[in-house]
Amino acid sequence: MTSHVSKNPLRPRRADGEATRWRILEEAGKLIAVSGFAETSSKSIAQKAGVDLASINYHFGSRAGLYQAVLAEAHSRLISMKVLTEVGASGLPARDKLRKVIESMVKSATSRQSWHTRVLGRELLSPSSHLAVLQTMEVLPKFQVVLTILSEITGLAPDDPALSRCLISVGAPCAMLLVVGRHATIFSDIVTATPKEILVEHLYHFALGGLEAIARKRSGHPLSPAVRMSGNFDQ
Image 1: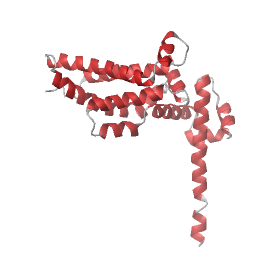
Image 2: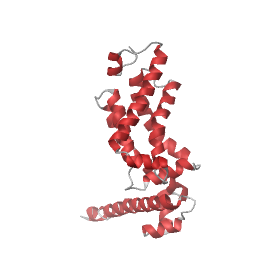
Image 3: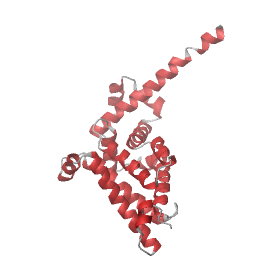
Image 4: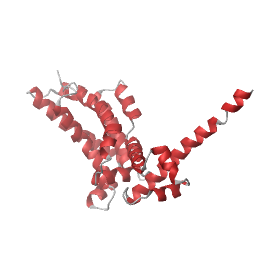
């Protein structure tokens, strides 16, 4: 009986600790999205989250650690490793996998219901020293999954430098949606006025056209219609 009583109180403390960590991260994300990391104090985050300053250091190590966690969460909301892994492991043709990746990114990047788009948009426009941590924690592992998909489409080896350039060409327009949506410009008006389905189709076909061009250049001959339809460009 005694052993059961002594163990039970630990469970709510663990649950409360995770809830507190999540609340700090969520409130920090909201504040940073509005004012930026440099202008957002630990005190304001603590007040908004209803915790003391020591809680930030306890859960994240430091203010910098909190921001790195915010960036990682923001990127995960843009496109999660779970989603990418499921798409990559699916039995779909490579071209359909690419469409699903673009669709997921467009849906998330054009969302105005979460702070993640504004946080990432700020970091893209004015990169901080924490961007390197984000790349290591979130970006690079996801790149490997997408590279495999692009390799299936083009027939290029995953470690081919040309394929890395293809990945940048495919991902950059999706990433720019985070930036153009932050300010009212002619470009943001075009994006917001375009239905998501049309935007996905445009970015997908634009990306596919570039991938096919690179594959043709590497193969040294035009692709037959059958090969273009199958997406197997190393025939």
